[in-house]
Image (cartoon, rainbow, N blue to C red; front, side):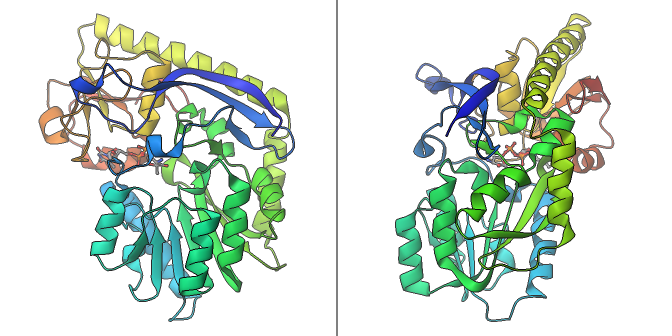
Amino acid sequence: MDKTKFLDLGKQPIANRFLSKDDFEDEFFYHLEVGLDQETMLVTHMNYVDAPMMFNDNYAYRGSMSTTMVNHFSMFSESMRSILKPECKVLEIGSNDGVFIKNWNKENTIAVEPCGNFAKETNELGYKTYSEFWTAELADRILEEHGTMDFIFSANCMCHIPDLDQTFESIAKVLDRDGIFVFEDPSLSQMICLNSYDQIYDEHPHIFSVTALYKILRKHGLHIIKVENTTVHGGSNRIWVQGKHANRDRTVTDNLDAEKILGLHDTSTYNRFAESVAKSKSDLVNLLTRCKANGSKVISYGATSKSTTVFNYCNIDTNMIDYITDTTPEKQGLYSPGTHIPVIPPEEGIDNTVNFAYLGAWNFSEEIKAKERNFYGKFITHVPTVRIL
Ligand code: DWN
């Protein structure tokens, strides 16, 4: 890959590794630099963090912690069942805590999840779950044990895998000739439009455009037949793929054209984005500094991988943010990666002493605002601009 660097997000930790005080001294950091692959137009890290450093038996991110995502996967499953035969064979790659496969029957559904703590949960639910990374060897084993798959699904996983060629080549092998492969990941267009640079962290080695995926998938005999632009996770694209030449609907050309108009083919777009990111940093630090100077209590809502990127890039620690609230048991009682802000349950941290809450989980702002309608303070966000809501 011939990559041209356009963004430097500085020294970053493992975004989802929440720590106890004893872990601070040996914490791992890497230099997060982002570039553009000149051949495929893929936006990707200049260097990748080794997968086992991020995905292991203590993985903290639990997909079912938001009703938004539970409903999102439930509605999508219902729509898929209406077009698939009842006995269709389903494979999910990156099944996390089962938030998607729980909508499918156990007999015809298998899953791949390298994080052992979650693979254990879905195996105990009765879903055959391979607790491994998706590789060509695993694909061959699945093909041998289960035959080809009618429906392969992957949410917030494909953009987590550095080697897309091996990944898509292996998927093409396991996908039935009449099968459908659907995956969804954050949209590069949305990141550029929302200035949501916090979509970039160790677990996201790539931020996908349809343009780049079209070029990469085609090398492996996979063809995009539909693109759905969804609002989840700060704006994602759901990509529908078939292994044979099939009639593609107009959403494919619409998205390819929209990306060209947005300037995703033009390196100056990425240089302007980097300038916007630098401005976002100074605006956020200035706002939080003013809040603290006025004696306000400022917290963060949602201990996200995204806010790990923001807090480490902007050097935001307990000097500006008193603590972070989060509903995930695996994160509570620990400290955030890199800048070591304590994480506590919302029921302990959201009260009338709080003047401002930075939206670490801004992608769930509607759900959060509905949940916290009695919140006395005000929310702060950085997307698309730094401001008090
Ligand atoms: O790609 C990924 C996405 C899907 O999830 C993973 N690599 C890592 C992770 O990224 P994230 O941590 O930025 O994701 P979320 O879904 O924005 O994280 C939301 C966090 O906020 C969770 O820890 C749960 C928490 N939360 C909360 O405390 N109160 C969420 C809601 C909706 C709430 O009301």
